[in-house]
Image (cartoon, rainbow, N blue to C red; front, side):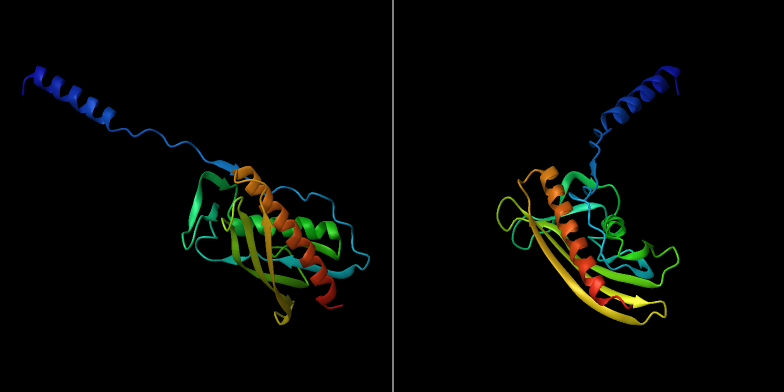
Length: 198
């Protein structure tokens, strides 16, 4: 094959590959849950045991770092261009640990990777925004079970919380998630104070 034809073909292939390059997708903005709006007051009664908090179980959609939204009816979607900075179950676990440490109800609160006397197991049933009206509300449901070091259940319950966002803008929706998890932490602390074995 003549050198000229080889050069022409190589040039054509280069142009073709350049034309087929798709524009790069804009990176998603990563969000974390806001810190608690007010510092929790340490509980008057302090339990001697150590509390471990396991990562909540969750279904396929809620196990990711996508911010889930129910825009209308039976439609399930995720916010475009926005994600949690880690998967939702790990996000919630870290928030609960930090909040319960502030309450100082137990001698120590940590993840279940460290030694514990009581273990909080949970399943994240709902963690999404819903456009029942506008602005949307955050729907949070967490089923919990407290088990002893012998793995025997001692108590269980379910928490269901709704928090209205100030607007439909994603930062305001994220703030509503933060307020909902703050309320969850407060309710969980009261429940643990009443149900944790002495």
